[in-house]
Length: 96
Image (cartoon, rainbow, N blue to C red):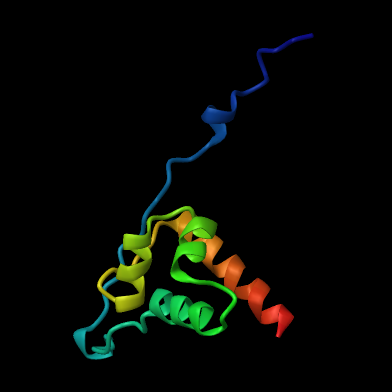
């Protein structure tokens, strides 16, 4: 078999191009994004299915982290943790 015509995958791949977009200042919304994490935590705790401790165990985070999310002092969990939080939230919505 003649392998001289077979190209390696990296040879056919073009370098990634990141376009730069310019947004006019007048089109930027000045309001902050809603605190989604805080809303979900509050909603889960209000449902009486979870305590802060059981929620922390389920999401594999510390109780301090849950308290920070509930108070709104930390708004951005990691992608993996937010994914768990969202799945948990969706699961509780299906049961109601």
